[in-house]
Length: 96
Image (cartoon, rainbow, N blue to C red; front, top):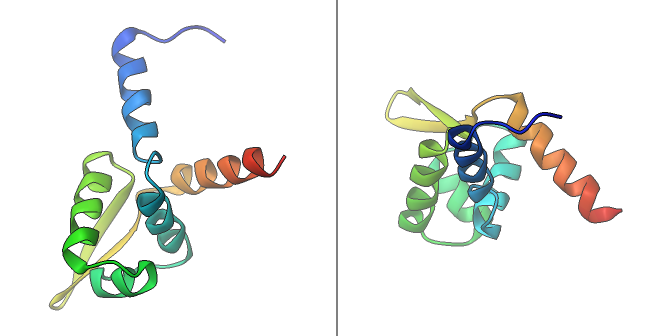
């Protein structure tokens, strides 16, 4: 394996910061199952909608999630299958 350029390593480190908070990891696992709105995520995680909105904003900035509008609702989902793969690999590693 070759060592990436510093800029690329910085991006990789930023990616893993998205997984460095248990609340964000919980949100990602929920979104791995299906699209959800802020209210549904807040109910599942049992924290305020404003706290969820803050975490979602960070996850969007890290390109780990995406969103789409459906009428007045905004639905969130994982950005792509790579995010789900990272979650699966993380779980596998922790359970070894």
